[in-house]
View 1 (tube, rainbow, N blue to C red):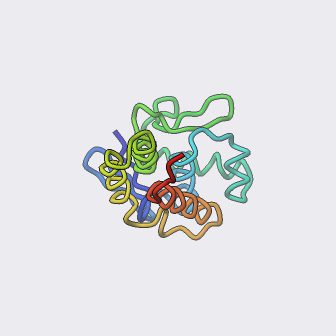
View 2 (cartoon, rainbow, N blue to C red):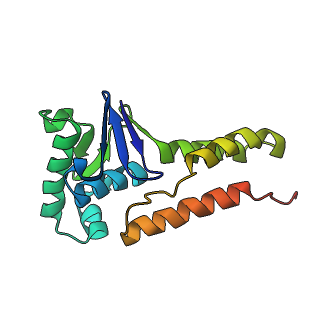
Length: 161
């Protein structure tokens, strides 16, 4: 299992190992991991456009990231799957804190104010540090603002209709 932390600095915990910073093979492979963890399946072209590089560079960076996450594992057995030019993280092998945050907000949204307190408090704990706090890229700033807004909206009492 790969436990991916996007709130705070990007980290991956797996098999008793913690990967962070340059452990991913550089900024672009780390950014690819964050994009796949946040946005799910993306085409090579979408990833390249977001990162502002050529698709060939993304393909090379994906190979670096795969090797850093699972040294010696073949592409078809990697946690990063690719099919028909779309890449994603294997959902059966990853746990992403941002996905847990989204699930907690969804649970809270379906409950009365009293019963929403616990999932909202858990979401606030997860989001106690900014999403992708060490990343300066425009897409990371947009994601940070999106998650900050989600938390604010979820925590704001809604009028009774």
